[in-house]
Image (cartoon, rainbow, N blue to C red):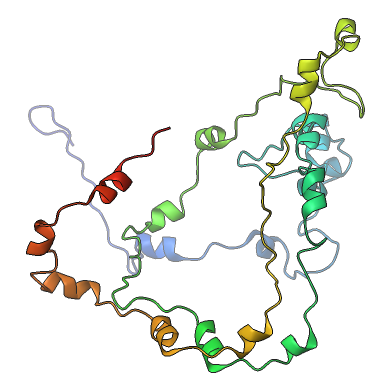
Length: 300
């Protein structure tokens, strides 16, 4: 109906249902499954599809894109074992994976000089142990010396690192940019040729160098350095003990000197006020000419 002033007023009055149902109750109902709506029974484990295929789908020809996507993935397990894994995921190039002939030649161990081989006492540092040494009963002094050295009473172990890594930092994943920056910088060797064969020099030698004759000075400089005339080699770690040394009895003076020195703890010196006090006699002492002579530095 039209009211005064040209305004339209509706005469519709809402009606209430007898059994109203809210919107939330309608949305709370479970959604019916597609397979249950089309087929009453469904048996798993057979080769039949869940729904019937149309004749058009069965006679359709796949496109080139579908044939490309249906190919199985390649197995890179054997390839990953032969190549060293890197952070970026890309294996190193083949020409950088193997050392050159120059590196193999430099990696060979250094050979001993003939003078050293002639002067050494035995061929091997290992020597057989006699039965008497194997069955020997150690004395109390040997057992005492065999005990490992204990820690000092005032020893303070190293403190643990106070910083703790957060769980977010542990579970963080590096971005593609960070992985790219983490890859090692690969440089190509330019000091030697790329392809070398055994027995071939690294660089080309000119004909004039091959026909050159060494001078007496060059021959003298090429000789290896000899040992000094007064050179004394290292003493053999095994030497025979005399019968007199075996039967010797230590004197009281030797027993007194064999006792370990007793020193006060480090903490006690801080409590002593006279620990660093200089005696008056030491302050009035006069240096002798002999001490002054020994105190002078060696002139070279």
